[in-house]
Amino acid sequence: MTENGTPEGAAPSLPAAAHGATPTRGIGNVPRSTTETGKFGRLFRGLPPLMLDETQIQNVVNQMVDAGEQSSGGGWSGTPTASDSNLAAGWTYFAQFVDHDITFDPTSMLDQANDPDALENFRTPRFDLDSVYGLGPSANPWLYDRNDPDKLLLGVNSAEFLQRDLNRNHQGRALIGDPRNDVHVIIAQLHLAFVEFHNHVVDRVRADPSLVTGVPATPVGGWGGGAPVSGQPTFGQIVTLVRWHYQWLVLTGFLPAIAGPDTVGEVLKRDKKGGLDAVLKFYNVRRNPWMPVEFSAAAYRFGHSLVRDAYLLNGTLPPLPVFSPAGDADPLADLRGFRRLPAGWEIEWHRFFDGLPNSGTETQRARLFDTRIAAPLHSLPASIDQMQRSLALLNIKRGVAVELPSGEDFATAVAGKLGLDPASVAVSSGLSHGTPLWFWFLKEAEIQRGGQTLGPVGGRVVAEVLVGLAENDPSSFLKAQPDWRPTLGAQAGEFTIADLLTIAGVAL
Ligand code: HEM
View 1 (tube, protein in one colour):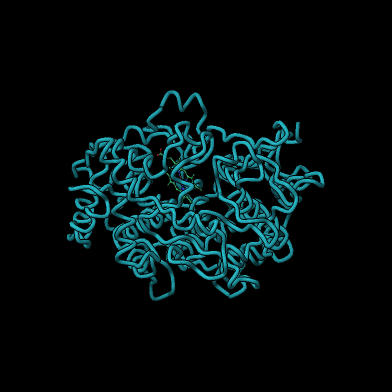
View 2: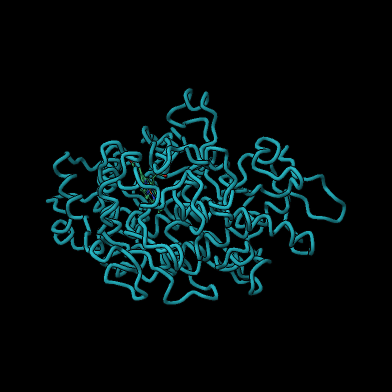
């Protein structure tokens, strides 16, 4: 047996908590009536659902296979290929990290069983990093350092394993707020960067308390942390400072990169004083923020199109896919997580993000936002989908199951026009009428934005929902202090992913 509790040579299978392994609670029953509310809802309740049978769905999936990159092993030569975008590859997994943050469901098993459709009892979607902080030091003390309870606990591994790692139990499972953030190596190390960022921010604000001037303490009762020391920032203030910097990064760095600056500029405007104002047209929040199914089952699944066949973690390892069926037997065949990793598997982040000292030709790019999905995702490992089906198939089936409208109907409702030639979309989807919404969003990205960002309608949905979640969170900087500016970045008033990784001490 190995230290992570699996038989020698076998990689651990993915537990039900893996990203995508179980549908998000509540997505199985999305109300149409305007009087019902819940975790999920619809942006346009009156649009008819697109009905597709199994053959029609399979037809679309067949159009979405891209085997092109496979021949080169999916590696990175330093020059983008025809299937690469300009977007740095790390944003793909930043997107997944954000998805986990806003869909995290810490509801107890009893409450989940009593409310399977998440109509009453659900955690409001927020950019609050509860995937990192869990329920705070009082409720989840195992996430925190007993000797300095303001800090999150890091892992300790023996020499044959990766030294810089998440805290893990003796079977290798990460002890983190949201277990999905250990599903593969890239998101696990991104999560680790957030943990280390938090810990370094603790040191920084202790050395210079002016960094938290005007920042309110996290308004969560009984969170604990270290005992308040006079003149020193409290744990609650440090958490708010970290969250606000993360929210800034989501709204001003990540969102324009995926939805396009023009689309974001229509939804998040700068006022005369330099503050940010949300202008929402389609995403209305009456009581609590909720998840539009058009976002969750279609627009925000753009990430599946960005996944590369394989990634170079550093200059030593060969290119490896995130998941491959071969990884079920060979722990060195893919980047799956839920385990301690061999020494030498650390990520050199300049290979994933721009703006770091070594970024440049070695920085891998995400695939284009388009209707071609990398080959490995067309045969998921049995541990994610027992029938080893294509992820494209699962997405389109989910869209049908939650009664999404066609792309044609949705685009007309949002923009008053189609924006794409329906006949040529039909040719590329293999369908004679009505296009699945997820496919439509990817097609408009491909045709109207050259695959560099989401298109105007899909981008608008993503921008409205992400901005709307922040706007309707009383503790976000956007709501609480819309003219707040970051204090931790290298450039005054700005904060980038390169700043985060640099402060975290992982900017290799
Ligand atoms: C790394 C490769 C990935 C795999 C194998 C994967 C797999 C899956 C699977 C199996 C599902 C459930 C499908 C269903 O509805 O039955 C899913 C859902 C989803 N995925 Fe992924 N995914 C990956 C990456 C990403 C990325 C990078 C994003 C970033 C945008 C993303 C966003 C989503 C979203 C929004 C859902 C809907 C459920 C939720 O909110 O979590 N996925 N994925």
